[in-house]
Length: 191
Image (tube, one colour):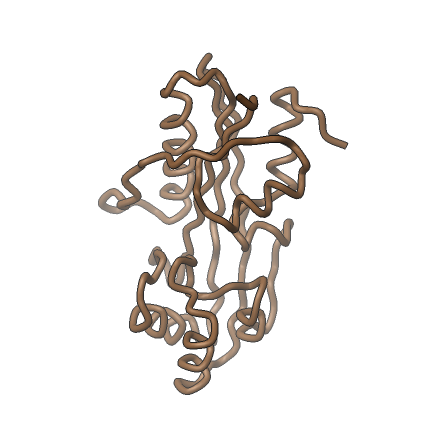
């Protein structure tokens, strides 16, 4: 068994973590991702990242577990993964011409109780979008499993005026700068 388990079955997070060239396993954390009443988007992302990592370490593997969660926030409201076309179109229409904040939380947890965490904030400035271009985009990329209804690593980049961030990988779902920092603190060897 490797000493690191990614607490996610997301192909996006798996692909990003592979960039660090560390061996790792993948496990589904089985965490309820429902927001608590009145829970702020940032707090939700942090709670879910920690819950995912802890769910894996509680299985007694002895490995470090890396949990991550991303919550999009538009006008103070959390936006989840759309799941279907109509919701994706509605989300993009609501974000048109606005600045949307993406809170991407990380948690590296060990069964011995050690917990290392970080959270990244990315602000996406959406350009004003017409209904027809929203529908064309959604039909082309079908971003139904992505918070905010777009894939910034693909055609979704055409929806923006600007992106303000500290880490360009955060918007895809796993901020690698913070991830590498936490892994080094946990004793993993990285360049």
